[in-house]
Image 1 (cartoon, helix red, strand yellow):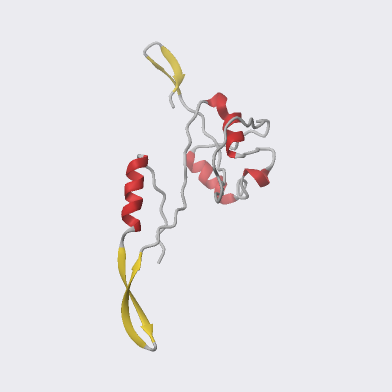
Image 2 (cartoon, helix red, strand yellow):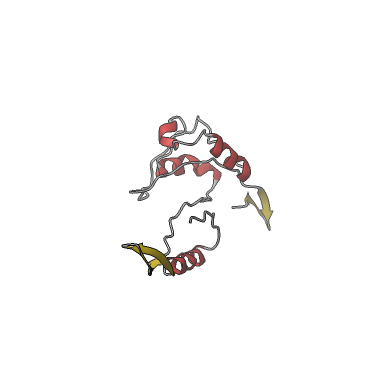
Amino acid sequence: MHLYFISRGIKQNRDIFVNFLQTRLFPWKIKIDGKETTETVQGALRPVELWEYVFPKESLPEVCGMLGIDPKNTDNYGALSSSIQNSMLRKMLGAKEIPKDITPIQKDFVFKQGMGLHVLGIKDDVMGKIGNRDQEML
């Protein structure tokens, strides 16, 4: 049986939650040579994660470069970026597609070996005032 869910929370709390799920053992009824027996099996936590990365608006080209996202090249952008499912998720998140006129700037490196990114879109921050500061409310 598979249970799918999306998590969101404080990173260290998420890590503890994951560690707990990874250590759970369950009785598993199987048949060996036609004879029913029970073995123990570990729960398999297989991440399907939705992430939100928050950064200043003017850093979008740098973030695209860092993550290898080229809005002009949808093969590089994520194979499902324009699919109906991604459009629905983007709408649910209140996000929009990354504008095609963004040119990625490579400044930093992020280890992505063994990772796949399927970009849903971006969402602007609300502008606000804190004391004497007018700023994005990151």
